Image 1: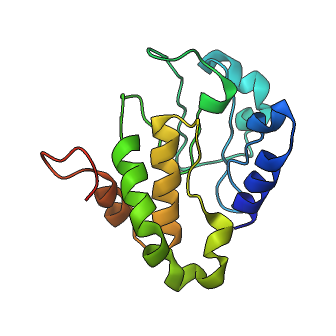
Image 2: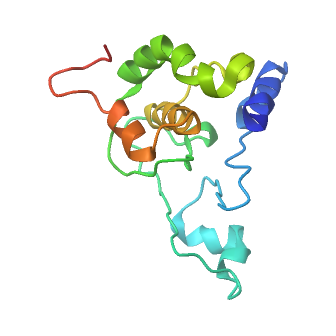
Length: 162
């Protein structure tokens, strides 16, 4: 909730730099770093990752090999729930389905605070970021991660959400 309120407040600022603000996570359990850099630059940018006292059961790095867009900060990964290297195009179905389902899906969990987190996604995000935002919304509103992922994948032969 706090992160979504921050994002809305920054987006409302009348400054060109507002598109560069990004809070990967406010979790006390998960560290998420964002950087527009190549793999060999990670250690210099985030020296704590080379610290022997830092341990993790899992570490994921996504290095963008852009084929259809020029690399830019807003398109740089990471996302909160996904990391991938394949082309995906879920935005049309994701946006359509989420637009219709969002009030009933989250009202029980968020109640009157639902309006504070809407819209779930915004214009100008990559397909992957849109997918990630909707997936996060579903999980934060009580769906298990596997269930939410299955909801995000169109049924065979369908190109948009119902």
